[in-house]
Image 1 (cartoon, helix red, strand yellow):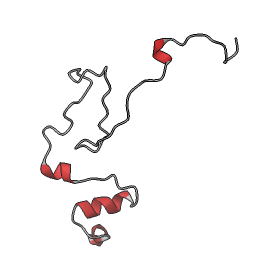
Image 2 (image 1 turned 180 degrees about the horizontal axis):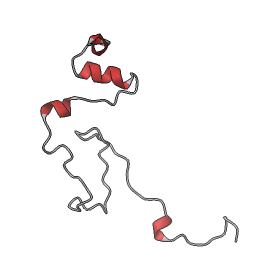
Image 3 (image 1 turned 45 degrees about the horizontal axis):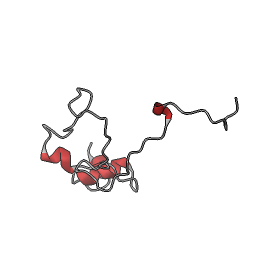
Length: 87
């Protein structure tokens, strides 16, 4: 059977009709509603920032324009190279 035949696809293999996100949530993730996700399911973390501190939420290592060690140093209030000065 060739790939262009008129065989109906099972529902699970059809493209999802989930609209794209139009906002970003506080965690930085696109705010996209997926209709069949149960937020009460134990495998879903509906509050990933629960029990975290202000400092834990202040630090953002997701700047793709700088190396990770530079981002860490900046976010910890260190100047670049300061950690190498310690003996």
